[in-house]
Amino acid sequence: MIMINGQIVKSEALNKLITDKEQKNIVKQMAALGVTYEYQSMDELKFELQFRENTMKAATQLNKSGVKFTTFTYAFPNKKYWQRLPNGGFLLRGGTAPSTAILDILKNGKLYAFECSTAIAIVLYIATLYTIGPELFNLYFKRLYLFDWQFDEDLPVFPKDGDDFIPGDVLHFNNPDFDPKQPHWRAENVIYFGDDKYYGHGVGIRNASTIIKFLNTKRKPDPEESAYLMRQITRPVYRSLFLLTLQN
Image (cartoon, rainbow, N blue to C red):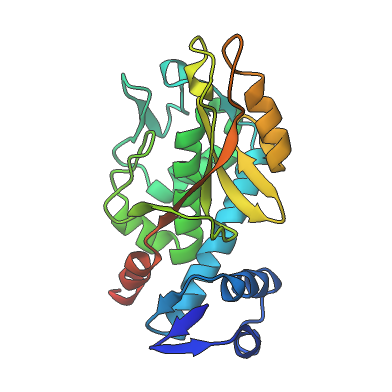
């Protein structure tokens, strides 16, 4: 259910205002769910739809970029733009435009290796760039830092329990009986595309059963529990990002 300025709006009415096919599909799914999504204006809703579409675009591009999967211990970036920190995180080098550095990951993917949580952060930063443009991105993300689930204060994200999955959401596969020798496969963070499609760094764009089968090959001897898709969603605070665009 979608509510704009205190009033419920049906997807049929929104279809007349939204021309993009992918965004129409997102609205249709949101309107059919038993959760109320509230917006102060139509512009705010359109911003979120654009961001969600850009999230899927960024995930598709990262999947094709040639970046490698590895653990924090062995992670590495393109040294031209990023400083590798002892914890395996990447810190933007001084004098580098954040937009140039984040897009270099897509351009020169073979010069990068990282694990799946950093991949999710990269996808969301690229989606932010695509949505707000390079000028604002360079203004707000001057000290870009890529590591695990740490995000800049201007890109707040929040987890919530539930199964109201919407294309562009970050979802999570849990692997409770993971192999202790391969702890990086204790879970897989993914971008949801809808229609049982998910992007996960290290597994590619796959359906849920394929990801679960893969994770089940990464379990300890004599496992008791299969990997599974969690009832948990992680989303950017779209309203916060939208308000940034209104300030400039």
